[in-house]
Image (tube, rainbow, N blue to C red; front, side, top):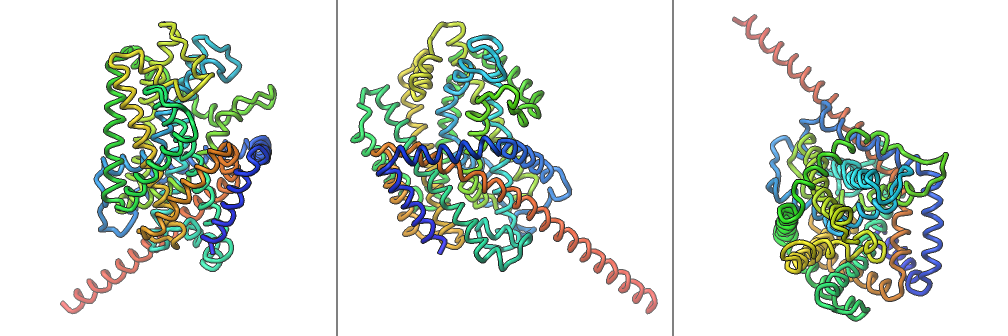
Length: 512
């Protein structure tokens, strides 16, 4: 039922985007503007609550609980685990926005600052850290932690609806309420992946055009989609242990090499200074930024950036959370939270300091007009920055390769997750189901790319973040309740064992 309903709703939106892209975009923008304008406070409050809840899970009394049986060990090495969760989470986003976002904020900064100033540069880096740091990874942490706990500790199905059994009961969780929750998860994932396939294709086309002069045309983009589809389906159908794991490790290796190259060949000391200053400003102002709205000035910056990002992360949470949960069996809650929350966030901070810091240095002191280039075409920001370094053309080719591999791992991870969600939570969905979803996603992306309906579908998926934010809060409550009940049961068992041991000792003493 969930599969059929999801396909029908997706088909309706795709046809809408194909034949009336402007109307879809207008309707989606109105819904999104309504949710942001009236519930922006809820996005900020709920995301901050989720961050606090994640740290509570790590450092509270449940930190030693295993995501699985007490004697289970992790399925994957720590490095492979980090690589897979990072690649599925936001790897391609860091490559695309690493230079573009700081320069965008430098031109149009928040908090009433004047663009193109030293203060604008400080705010640009601080808010880039904020948007790609602890908050988005806390969203992924909470949903994946809850799924992994109920899936591997309690033996429930790998469905988001299953996590609500302690809260609403098995009947509702497996009935119509659960069906609505799972359908929302599939639709959000399918919309997000389809738009990312299309937008990622445009990014790859932009890189190839910049490097090799290939035209930005529908024909080239169609060939890119076909090639990438074949590659990610090969990866997805070979399973987690081969395709996705190997590609994720390759992603992380190339990303680290690229980052180290820019760090060493770029303005090294400036990058370290930028990292230190930005991290200090981020940690010092994290609460204020987390709750910042502009009711007295009626500014639009927070809605256009922070609230847009929070809604985007929440909309992507079902996909990323389900995948991270799948590869995290055998880890303790504390190990899981610190691994998923802190390690990728720290890597993101370093990434933005390296690439954003290099871009700002070139803009502010070397008079390379990158900010204007970002305004005209964001896809060129990274390549224009790399061109200023030694071996710029070669390293731009490496960056394009990194975008492609990140793109493939995100797509095959999403295909794997869609297969799980539409196969009643099976840990290893059949290749047939994964191929169906993979071909469907690429077809949707191609149709919308041709018709110009990609942005409308992207906004529609983000508009679905509001109900899913409520679902996330419910998942926190359900996890807390289940852990508390497990702890009570453990204490009760310990009391019974102590009583039995005491009775046994007394009996032996009396007999003696």
